Image 1 (cartoon, rainbow, N blue to C red):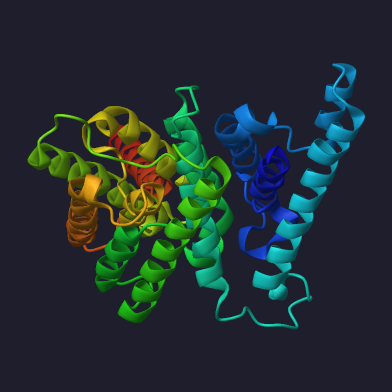
Image 2: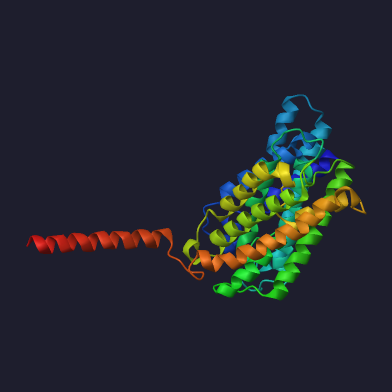
Length: 355
């Protein structure tokens, strides 16, 4: 089983390509950040099971510590190479236009494929990092880091939603103009994200057997308090997504993934003990598989996640034009240039008066 963990762990960083791998993200300054945080996330979530090498060169260190050569070959050589090959194959399947010198158009299924992979990786990380057997206490770090990396990896292609509440927020925000995202595409995204969450939980259950991590309302917490916590956490998350990824004033920035990932990390630490910290209806579905059907024991949690999160996404989308002057505002650089022009005009006026 550790072989499977190493294989999956190796797929994660390989799905976060550096600039030369994707023209959509060409010239970005975040590729190292995305790759490094993917390794950090994987080390926290699966390191306790497989050792978390994700690299044949790192696996050589195990030989120096006396680990059986056959075990090292299977676990730290074959598994990473298999994971890298699967990741490369998936990249070629979803991005043939990136590997054919522009002779092939982007397939229609690419956006949904990216949404499925990104949501799967996020939910798989949650299932592992928050598992009963993982005593690291760093689950929020692992989850936030994986979301950040996947947003960087898939954002230039699909938008990197990985959350039905975000897709709903983007749909409502699209009314302010500037982006093209219709109801049909939003519905497909939401279904894809939900299926990916169920698949991720099933995969984690197949590996762990029991004790798969999933969000759940804290013991003794009133449903009203949990609902409010999920609503506020999701509202902040979707608002951050809309501001850093769709607002004209922040267009072309390289911090969008960092802002989104660390928002989830912050909300998971502060609100997780109250509501479970899903902030995502798809993540809220993880318990349906982790506990098995029917999901009676946590029906309260599920109802909170399936109502509070979409409501927050809707409100965030409605608030966007109010917070950005109809969807348009000056970027920090434009504001700085304006301020400098005002200063220059004032200085010229003072000089004229001095003459």
